[in-house]
Amino acid sequence: MTATPPSDPVPLPATPVCRPATVAVHAGRPGHVTGRPANPPVLFSSTYRAADGASGPGDRVYGRWDNETWEAFESALGALEGGAALVFASGMAAIAAALDEVPPGGVVVVPRHAYSGTLGLVTDRVAAGLLTARHVDIADTAEVTAAAQDADLVWVESPTNPMLEVADLPAVIAAAHAAGARVAVDNTFATPLLLRPLEHGADLVVHSVTKYLAGHSDVVLGACVTAGPDAGEPARQLFGRLLRRRTMHGAIPGPMEVWLALRGLRTLHLRVERAGANAAELARRLSGHPAVLQVRHPSLPTDPGHERAARQLGGFGAIVSVEVAGGATGAERVASATRLWLHATSLGGVESSLERRRRHAAEAPTVPENLLRLSVGVEDVEDLWADLDQALRTTLEP
Ligand code: PLP
Image (tube, rainbow, N blue to C red; front, side, top):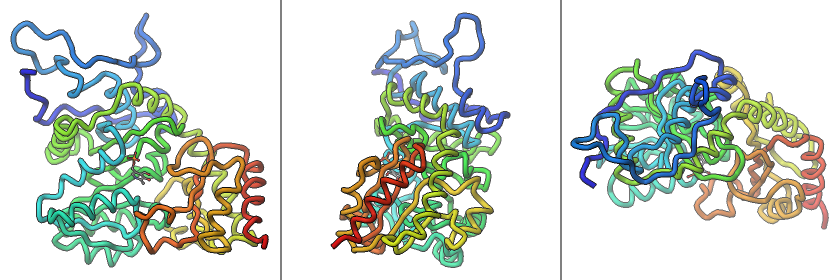
């Protein structure tokens, strides 16, 4: 290998003009030219025929540097988020690349409840003496504002995994920027159909594409998205640094996975809408169930995040967290008694699944032991309810 990997800021893709549902269906296709395919190809090649002499700027050289299938997905996700996307091998690979923005000795503000892998990676870096972490209630804007002073990065999940706290995103971004900190938003739960953090001024968005974007529980994939070309030099440079990290760390996805994710993305709007409607209906019914002690879902008027979510989000999402009777044992009983709901980790697939989050030692100790995180899918809500109801009733049996 003689050529050097890309290190300079690269041209960013353009932003969309169509509405999100149309963008999801059309972005990243080859274009309406006679004889061209409707879909981008799955491009399997680790190397390319070299230019005779020095290779030029647009030349494809090596499979770790770029790939046509990645670019199709990136142009679709970039259009949906209103920025420039880079696909990574997993959500964690994207998160690691984003956390690398914090310089050695720097300070990162993180939600006390967030994806346990994100918090674990921060903890590892703190233990290695690389950074200082300040854990906050991301829904408490005053606490976030205080913690952002002298910080390098404020990390946001909204709604949080699995407690579904909702941040006041515009206020948090304004406070962070006033303090000189940058803001990264993990937009996995909301998806760009419910929330476009870059429009609120976030510097960076990350995704576990594994979840809603791909949507079929068949790939592990991630992405980073920065502001687009019109946002100026800092955004271009951030994009360039993230691209260089992906290349140099080899945090690259397989083309087949990316192609599957792009196919999944074509129905994102339909899935998010249906799953969200199912989730709201189930949250309402669960609130009156004798085996349920507490329901968390921003659609519920009683939920602490309801008003904020109604103002900021284009919907309430399809994750519902419930605390059930019988403690950890009761929750485990429910999870093993469902026949339709899949007892499994992860979320965002077309199929409904559930899990007691504290079964993982890495989950935050402030997440209740009896909390089940439900990932509501796109099935018929009556079937989902019937199965959940019978499983919940097992906790009421002696
Ligand atoms: N962010 C959130 C909110 C998640 O729930 C997850 C995984 O569950 C991740 C990031 C990590 O993504 P991945 O598993 O694709 O690496």
